[in-house]
Image 1 (cartoon, one colour):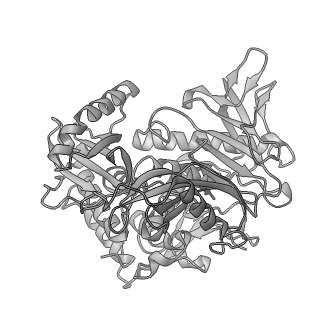
Image 2: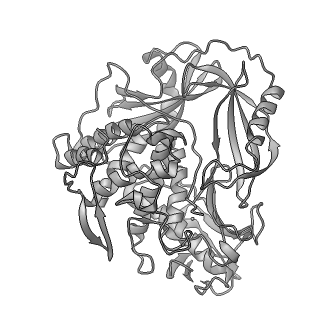
Image 3: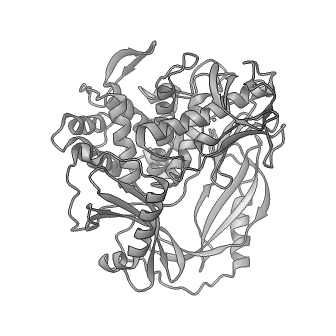
Amino acid sequence: MKRKLALGAVLSTSALLAGAIQVSAGLAQASPTPVPAQQRATLLAQAGSDAPVTARALGLGNAEKLVVKDVVTDADGSRHVRYERTYNGLPVLGGDLIVHQDGKGAMKSVDKAVQHSIAPASLSPKLSAGQAAAQATGAVSATVGIAKDSDEPALTSVDRTGTPRLVVWAASGTPRLAYETLVEGMRADGTPSSQRVVTDAATGEVLSTHEGIQTANAAGTGKGVFVGSVPLTTNSTGTGYELKDATRGGQYTVTLSNKTGGNGTLYTDADNAWGDGTVSNGQSAAVDAQYGAAATWDFYKNVFGRSGIRNDGVGAYSRVHYGRNYVNAFWSDSCFCMTYGDGASNTHPLTELDVSGHEMSHGVTANTAGLNYSGESGGLNEATSDIFGTGVEFNANLSADKGDYLIGELINLNGNGTPLRYMDKPSKDGSSADYWSSGVGSLNVHYSSGVANHFFYLLSEGSGAKTVNGVAYDSPTYTGTAVTGIGRDKALQVWYRALTVYMTSTTDYKGARTATLKAAGDLYGATSAEYQAVAAAWSGVNVN
């Protein structure tokens, strides 16, 4: 059975406020600039102080408050402030918005998740918290033994239900009072399950459920299973070394020793030479994981000026040797950690480099646009991880794992030597969509992601036959019209700016076209070849 790298998403969304002034093209001035931690903290504090004034300027009611989530600053001083929203103190799921400001702090435009009023019909729940918990548990329990799709193993147990919290649900339909409940369990392949279930506080109707476990990957030296011989930055204790990197936010790697829980045991070594490239040496998979985390950190830092997954300078940690015969890898926001299984017969670890980049990029999405993990936004969420995972692989430039537009090509999960996904022609995997259609949002998110993956390939390399790093590609277009690429580096900049500045939790494919065109206009100008290439690449996948 094919397995895809999976994920869960955090709520957050956007659509341009009616009548707002469009952001003008800024060419190179729009490029993101690295912001020191202290300056970023100051900007966040200032945005928090400005929140009441901003709320009034947006015409929000007295019951609505804004809570700052992130600030992106451009080279010309322009700022893009991302806010979450509360209503009478309750979190509003789907109430997020982005305020775009000039260098002096004057508001230029706003992207928001919903255009209608947030005020729910009632703030008096008809169900108790206990009834809500029972409803959520029942909804999840009903799925025990049933796989949601061919790539998600069935839930085998429901182990714990948290205390529900009251929220306002505004991500779809008319805003209403709801309960959000965390229901935890285990899946058949050993993956932990952590589902957030949103139920109507009046009727108990399940409004949304999403999985929070995101699956798929001193100067020392290491030899990994996939990365080969690589340098590692480690920590000297005076008597030995730890697989911990203080230069990248303190990120580190532990072994779970085939357990499925806990914080694991930090890897230590006497001579600072880690692993030997064989699976039988437990350190080899740890080398892959530690290097993958470092390569992902360096990619975001060097390419986008982003300091870590949350852009706060804090490194995530990695856990290897999870469970037994566990054929997957996953990212979890709750532990802020990356976890890898050892695969079939405990001899095929899932520690490939683009798996690492893919999974940890889910954390970046959760801390920026928060694309909902369902429908077309779910496909965009999954594609974002494929796009940035590919960027990590190219950026690392390893001889043992050269950059390509194939996803998971070394771990052989399909058992026949083929990759999990192809970006040049996604349908080659037998399930993914090459082009947009009205039904694409009903596909599994790993298959609907094909539209955005295909767009990114076309924008980077263009259509037709070509060979990159020894791999042959032949990318078609919807109408047969040729598309000329702008290069991977520029394509990555366009996608990152669109994700961090314009996309929100409910962005669909049409919205992604708009967001990337805005991003290209900001970076290169609205009359530039790059802007025209973005439009052509979207038309190439039937998004117009």
